Image 1 (cartoon, rainbow over the protein chains, first blue to last red):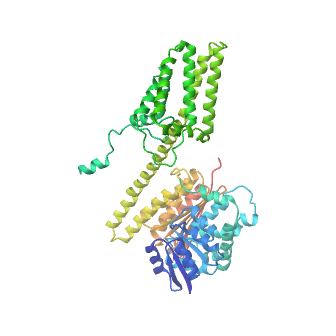
Image 2 (cartoon, one colour):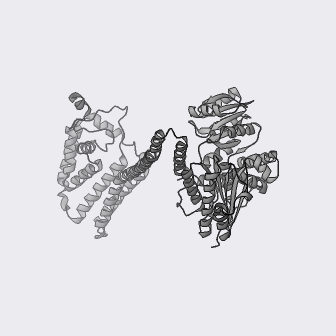
Image 3 (spheres, each protein chain N blue to C red):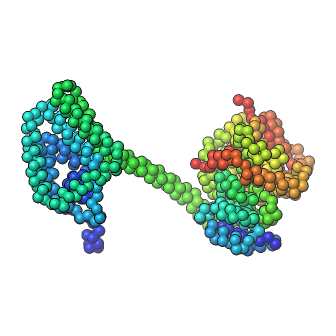
Length: 210
Length: 398
């Protein structure tokens, strides 16, 4: 049984998620702002935290900073209505292991939580699109080739995610196992979090409306 | 009601007082300015000018000082004066004196006499007036000089300049120049005095501008919320019995709001990404099936891409009409000079070989159209697995 904490400032949304999650998930608590989230994580030690990006008191990024800063091993799955690249890239680089939008179905969400609980990464089509865009949008040679660019295979996987393929479908399409797909996605996540390429943040900023 | 009114309204004619705060000499000009709702600089200049002409200013000042009570001051120590401003006013006075002297307007000290008399009178009055007042003036002499060094320095330079100029012209060294010189000095002094006021005015203008921009933004947000969000909510309540229509309205509103919040302002149809979004939105509205869009990269539209967009629309229509998929995914990518668009559903799918040859949708509107414009189209579908239409096109070389 995966133990989950729901962090969101909308009570209706929290109860909605609680109702939608399957039997394999146990919701151990809810929190509605940064402080209560940090406290609840320390007390309940959940396997996965469903983290809203926009919240009073600094938002999801602040929770990530305060919890992961203490060396906690808890895993975060970001959940948001925001399409802003800055928010999406921000929480991922803050340490979240995945990003899904709030209109995700209950079954897909259960799937994503399970994946994050097992230490894998979860990319929504939109996040995959953002990553492709961000890593493609430079002519400058990468500073650290290992971290600053995607391999051909990773690109293919991301492209299929962006096209709306499920992991199983990707595995079938590329003649690889689902586990290998997960490995590629985790590797992209690591690059996304560790790459120092300033293009990443610059890209995200440039994509910010106005 | 009447009682309330009288208690909240200010007294129409407050008594003339000499405030301690912000005064230069005795606070007379400051008090007058407040009474007349003018800038104290104006009153001070008037006093200086009047003093130069006939010494009237000085006398008037002294008399006013006598008859005006000092405003009660709460602070521990009386506030220090702005000596640099005082120096600047003095400089102007000296310069004007010299000017009058040289140009002959007051040669022979005709103007000096009443001034001297007035000054002596003023001094006597001052002596008798209030010992406290003198003490505070004398003890505060060195305070506040450091407050604004640049201005103090300028004031000193002007005074010295005025004095030197006076001496030089006494010696008939440059008979024609002093007039100009002292005009310059006076203007300089005026600038020194007016500088903080001008700066304040400028700041105020900037502030007003910022405030106006903020208000306009607020108005725009309010208009957006009112025209679209509130309107949609009303519509949703009215069609609450029809879940399909509710979903459609909510999706359309969500899209509009997202565009407004997150999409960079684009020329509606000039680029591929914008056009893909627009077409997807139109078909979503028309058929009530949610369309998820992911765009990577962007490019200016050309004739071939227009054809590609028509094929995209046809693929969307097919998916929305026949697939029974709850959601359709559209992915558009520009990589180098190649554009790739995919339309994928999770519907019932179909057997490609079983499609009768006279069905124009896929064969003509999608595959045929793409090939005529130098692109390719592939359709992959399996019963129960959904359908994906993949379009590829090279961008025209410019």
